[in-house]
Length: 338
Image (cartoon, rainbow, N blue to C red; front, side, top):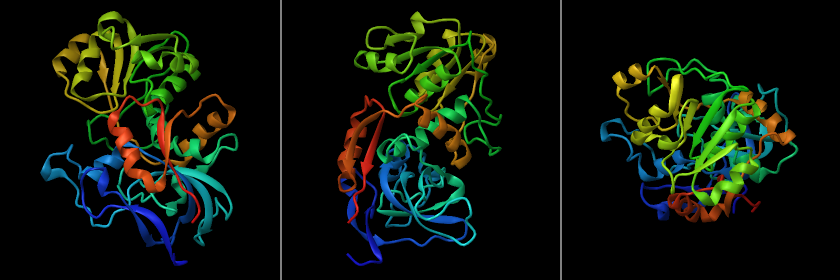
């Protein structure tokens, strides 16, 4: 391999996991405000397979145009290799992690090297390795921006009103649907860290895992319908979301809130009559917020669960694992030096 090239996963067309090709690609050069990272690990997230599939979850007229070849991915952990002249917050040799350029699809993280805006990065917590750090950015920031602090003024593509997190603390009851997944297991821990009483919803095989993370109650959705057995809840974080999310409205107390991570359709009259709020947002890159989350990760107050890991060359197998669902934490790609 030439000293000017690296190994990367690239798409030359949309399709099934088989279109993820492990091949040589040019090493990128950082521009103003950027650093070049030698990647050690890459976190896998839903936008990665949305991109791979060609954004088939969107109406055809709203799908973005991609110029092939495309390197997918946003979440990285690695070591700073070079810095642009105007970057002062990081230096060569710093261990960093981040979610790159999201909500664009220009992260290009499935590679041995990636350029990154310095503002998207935080120092990797010393108490965790690159594998776990790579699993944190998108899932952790999503939970953070939904539950703790939105942190930006960008309008949401899902609603006209600005998303506002609900104050959490002792006396607050929070239900997390899909609690074992990436966003869910972070949301559970952040709510618990604030002192809330947390009800976790997942399949029964995840119960011991979620109780270890701090869940006060557990509902196995394969046995009981949570919306039929739980009521008077202050906040529901529905990480499954989608059109079925409206069923949780009746579980809220008056004045409560439902936060669907994947926004669905809700009857505004029903929402108004129940006296509740439905609100969502789109996660955005933030090195500042990731630094705050990193302190919790370093202290062990919040931890990253790894469902499985695969070498970079086996990105297709990692996507196949994601498609099977029922994850316990995050899927991560490991990147070895060539």
